[in-house]
Length: 573
Image (cartoon, rainbow, N blue to C red; front, top):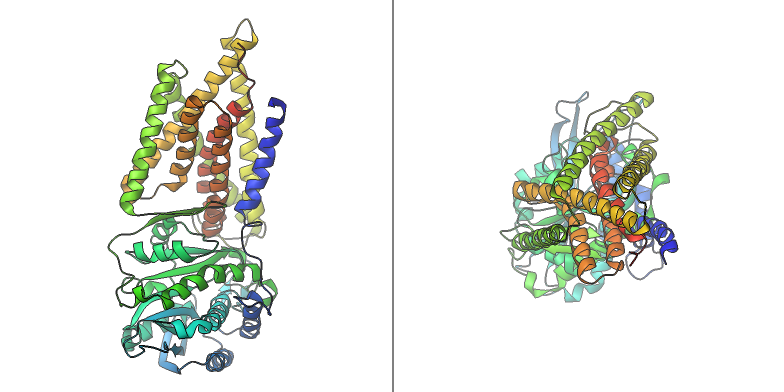
């Protein structure tokens, strides 16, 4: 069996990568004759919307898109379609250009067939303007708005068409709000919020749909404050869920905003977006030729069942039915799904894992398998090396930006590097290979030093002790980082999930000796790491390659000794 374990590990790495990146887990785009949500039908609307630039600098083209949307809403059978006009707005503020324009928001209402007088409403929001001029390293370009926010508009139209099939069962109604001038500071949403607030008075839930790029999974990247009930609905109903509550925390510190920003403190809601690829975002590459139906289908797989449940359940009839005091803590692990916790529940989960780690550490020490001093040195070495990985990642990003003529922003959004994704993947891959080689060099040196006679049993024991000290050194670092982050921001999934997997696996490995526990831990860490680091790298771009490499390095230094223990020859008796 030992001879096959390295091969098994290689296969596991490849398969977990495929699963994590959605090749086997995300829904395939459904054709136009499909009875449920069809990406192909949504694509037909997107094709019309994205034929020409339609930013605030293109009033005639924007009017054509608006008229098309009004016509489509009437075709769907809206009870009313209203256009709200706001004159002589200016924007963007503090930018290289400024436009003066009139904004036109489009609002459609679909009331429930029963109890409609005092009904609560689901509001679905997307903006229909495209990005204004965007300076790039070699030219100034204009977006066609196929993804941003043609995806949002197309998904809403297709979702509403499906929801209307259940209209006789609705207890709540639907409002569709297509905002104007989102790209110049959410001015359309601000105007209707400030001047026509009554539009929102009976709205109990908002779903905002954005697109940061044309492909990849649709991420629920932001939820409202006090989102415990909203996230429970999402957990119960969404198919192919993809979310991290950490992104809500991080997004709060970033200088990016959407229409949802204006209302999220008052109305419960969810904010969805694709996040790949930044080089298509707000540029002429955001055109119909780059539309990805699979990404559009993923929006529908999550949003349609959530909206359907909200509309047809009496428990959501109250205007405050989705409001809560606490935020949920959640994360997605590919193939395993969504893990959603109350804030207290997540703290309890952390405490349990911390205790398992400490008990396992103590048992290893009592049995003479660990030396506290060696574990501490390993933890410090991993920390110092991870900081070096961070610096190296930022250096690679700087070099890539310089070669491409792009503006480099340390830990900031960097556009204009055509090979950025390849550079990020190559950097992490090279780091992983170098880490394995360095580990094996020092491990073999330690084995030779500890087993002078080179007896097979002595060599195996020395190798096990080295792997154990290396593993618990990394786990100790993860324990400290997880504790600090939990106390500081209440979110620690990037270190806590790998720690949980390794701590539980090692305890089970000692109590019920079977290497399957080590294998299971590695698969879990890989699924988490591939998925989370993909989301992180796509969201923060190559400008944050240092952060990606730092987290990846710590994960790698957990995986290497786990793999070493898994593939190591059996003890000689």
